[in-house]
Image (cartoon, rainbow, N blue to C red):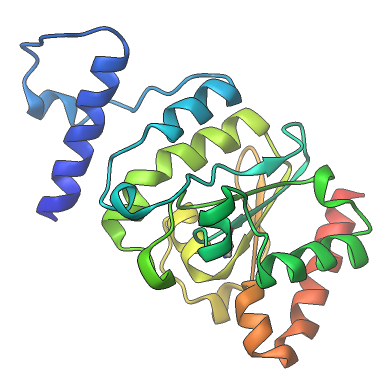
Length: 220
Ligand code: URA
């Protein structure tokens, strides 16, 4: 908890610095309740993310993986975190799991990958692709929330447990929540399995296919 607390305080100090403060007599306890201010355009947001040092992953990353696709897309996919290839290239979902995700978009949804927006909860790769820690995920969460508020998708498909749990602040296991339609005032979340899980468990492809058919229906 202490690390998370420190990361959040550091984030607030970074924001003050960005908006021009060189000194402040604001009590740090006052800052904790302040919402995080991020820019209202995607390119400026990307610049900020590119300079992020809010958690320890900034020390081991090769590249930030911000996300890519149509910034006006009605459909957004959110994964967990960059893998080895993504970290090396700075692009989202370009390894084996990404190839499968691209096929799902093209073959089931009959869309081009460029027509949707794809991002992750975490912008930096956890070493050896380990599951993100709560501190890492919570430090990074404002970035994905801002991406969502700028892109304004109608439907968000979360891929795997981490993406769903942190996006929706809900610890329901993915096996229970998968395929459910979760309505928010601005968008719908539809959680499904992560493509990496499908590579290890091909028999689960059938239910993901059904989930994507629901997405297609909601989009039409
Ligand atoms: N897995 C993810 O969750 N995201 C990527 O970008 C790649 C693999």
